[in-house]
Image (cartoon, rainbow, N blue to C red; front, side, top):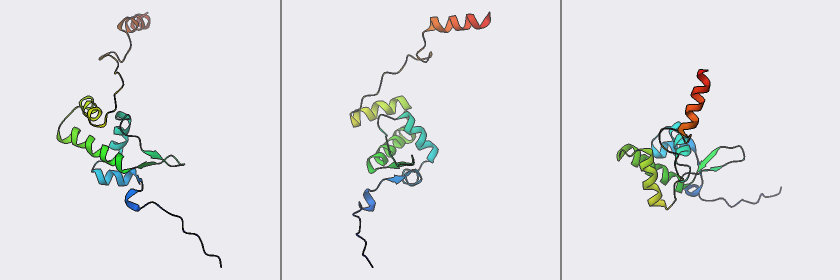
Length: 118
């Protein structure tokens, strides 16, 4: 009988974890982590398996814990938390569209409304 070669694996503490484990470690629901992943995409980018499942590294868990602290304990808004994270992690946030019109010029909105009323 042939002996199998043992594959060298990374230590369990350094392996990326699934979203359920990340949820448990951070203390928030999985849907909250998915939402934060969309909102804080500049800072949070978990690796994906071939099947598309998220795997969170130690750095991702630290970012999630910082996001939770800023939003839940310090009571920052999402925009405020992004500013703090960009200062802490040195990542610049992209320019936001102007408030209230989702980046659509008010003239174009008026024309759409006028056309809809006809």
